[in-house]
Length: 319
Ligand code: FE2
Image 1 (cartoon, rainbow, N blue to C red):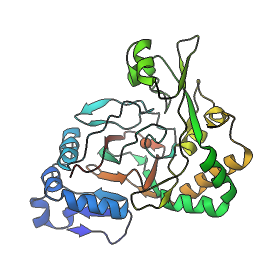
Image 2 (spheres, rainbow, N blue to C red):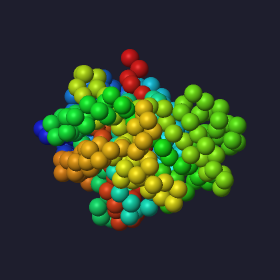
Image 3 (cartoon, helix red, strand yellow):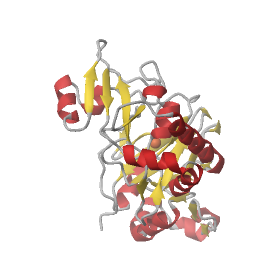
Image 4 (cartoon, rainbow, N blue to C red):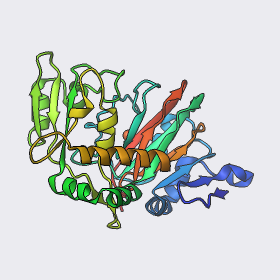
């Protein structure tokens, strides 16, 4: 069995040893070693499982995640268009292969983001198509060193996310999930779901404009280390479609004015830092990648089809 000495991601690969591989089916192994997996994820922020038996289908992925003993998570507020394919498993963002999905913490624009995000490779890309990830602690440290005054201002004033959702899901957009799929089939369902969770406006064409409650740009992980916990770079670079203008996707929480020049510089510098320092997992069929959503920002590179990556979102360990 190979356990990589590289720290990020920790790679657990039984296929290098025939006698190990014979007895290492993914889901039972996860169940037996769940506490070691939790500890490894906390230590490394990312763990890649490669070369296990019975690690081929969406149901294998689902069984492995259920065996980990994590609290279940309601992903209905996610902005990404997705399709459910097995219990707790859905397609990763279905945006076109030419689209970059910029770095973000999963659902950081929402009230309750998941603790763990898992990805599973059912079909690897013909080329490119990596899932990059980067330490949020390092990004926070970098921007604090580069623009401390702007960090202070953003921490104090906080931000709000603004986004327009279509009535019908638009798979041509990385943020094209419809308000029906997100909140419910009727406008009454939407308004009940959004009550107390920010502001909303119905547009003439039946689109829905939502403004989140105030959100932090920075947070801390379980060990108290500052993190760059937001979806602001993704909003600035990627919330772009026929309904959404990135320049209007983030505002200061106190005045609802667009970000000033220094804050935009901070986001652009953070984006460059992430690109330069990310680890890129080049997918192989059957790979399962666990990311600690408090420690790691993730993204998606463009790819050459076919590529089918599945995702699963979870809360913290149950015990
Ligand atoms: Fe994501």
